[in-house]
Amino acid sequence: MDKTLDLTRRDGLPEALYALRADYPRDTWQTHRNFDGLVAFWLDRHLMFRRLAETLRQDAEAAVDGAIDLRRMQARLTRFGGMLLQQLHDHHQIEDVHYFPKLVAYEARLSRGFDILDRDHHAMDGLLQRFAESANGVLQDKIERGAFHTEITGFETLLLRHLEDEEDLIVPVLLKHGPQGME
Figure 1 (cartoon, rainbow, N blue to C red):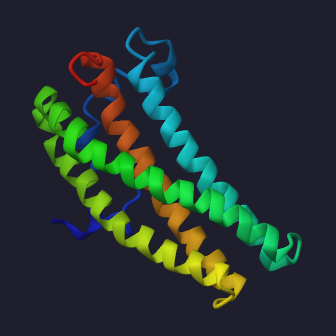
Figure 2 (figure 1 turned 45 degrees about the vertical axis):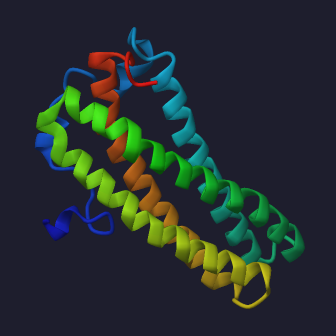
């Protein structure tokens, strides 16, 4: 596989994988007849992941600046970090096993994109593991807050890249074909 498509190196998917984007631009998604239901739910999950990562990064920044008590930061890290890890892992499993195979059947010409997203999920397993180890280091007072801030900032950057690419590929397929058979 082309190394430039690696999650840590790319700034988007290859243009050929955006075949449906012109017909289904982002600013029209919410008004499309197939938006409510599965698409809205799926995008809400992505919004939750974005907000959790942002909250954790902001807490890490506040901890580095001394603007949040370490115990409060640790409590929030336990709650929001655990939620992010568990929910993101479950979300990726459902996509890999259930949604991606069905979506490829709708738009076989985009199969390369689904392969890239699947590889992202495997790469994110390692990122999630590193995040968990770093978070545990903070919770056990074994690493400095600055190191955790660096970890969560890098994690958030890659998560946002993946979510945006996934949405740009998948939402147009769901809008075009509808959610029937996806549940």
